Amino acid sequence: MKKRYTLAIGICLFTIGLIAAPFQSVAAEAESVNLGIISYLTGPASPWGITDYRSIDMGADLVNEQGGFTVKGKTYKWNTLSYDSKYIPAEAVKAANKAIYGDKCRFLAIGGGACAIACLPLLKSNNMLSLNFAGGGESLTNPKNPLVFRYNPGIENMYAAFFPMLKEREGIKTVAVINPEDETGKSGLKAAELLADINNLEIVAKIFFERGTKDFTSILTKLIATQKPDLIDTSYTDPTSAALMCKQARELGYKGDILLAWGPDPEQVLKIACTHAEGAYLAVAGPFEPQNKAQQDVYDRYVAKWGVKEWSPNVWSHTELVLCLTKAIVDTQSFDSKVLADHLENMTWDSPFGELSFGLKKVFGIKRQLMFPITAYVIKSGKAVFIGTLDIPEGVID
Image (cartoon, rainbow, N blue to C red):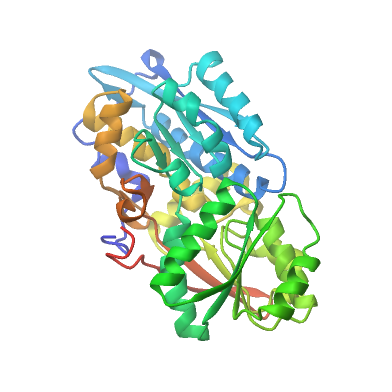
């Protein structure tokens, strides 16, 4: 990771990164390019999905407001189309069919590893480039799927940053990893195993549950009584379920550390877990409050459109998705999926978090995972206290 703390003005990306092909102001002549966003707008994962959709859409708005982009003398603008998968793979496939064949989407962004994996046959048969906010591990990200990118902070990044920090702060030695029973959850465990081994941590329990579960007491009772882990890690568990685990573990008398590992909203955590959230660590995609001018610009745009109560740090990485794709299109002057994939693999671009790129070749054999820093918080006295935005250690997984 380079220039992680550079105060790069991501909101002005196109006045810098796309200077070779400036925006045009002939909106009436612009042709639409359809981008399908398959997210989870309802169901337990909706705290992720709604924010993810809005932030991707906000990036498209920014491009369009500045006149669109130009390819071979013709001006284009983005037209985003949303689809609700409910985090059900079959619904995601249904949505992908409509997006590709009905709505003629040129690119897709799919939320959720299980959903993205279910859509792979459609993506591959249509040579569709996708930038997905998804887990799924090597089942999704591998050299056989060169047109599939993951544009979200990878869970491998999270463990690479968090495990060393928790060893230093809390002296943890043993970990229990809890995941949903699907492809996303399996990839979460695999990432935890990889980084636990690198950091000399022992995983003493590997637990799976059915999505939609609301009572985790039987799982947690056995875990606490028999394994006594230093850390309970909720891994790829959705935010609502993770907060419930935190509450129920504390009610059962668990005194160790808890890591809510995948984009929790502190207000939701405190509402569900109340005082039982005390001491829980939160791994998020960025700070709850902007830390520099570039971040403030993104925050102001989001709040102006949806209101301050709708703000979530899950916004951060996804606002750059359309900006990243647009830069690749303008750089190459092409909409061809293979041309774009080859360019994206080695492209760098500025963001409110510094210079970004794709990586994790050491893990997946191909550079298709966004290398995005992870922000750490801890709940203290009923508030989320900022620890810092953690760099991904160089040379470990990239």
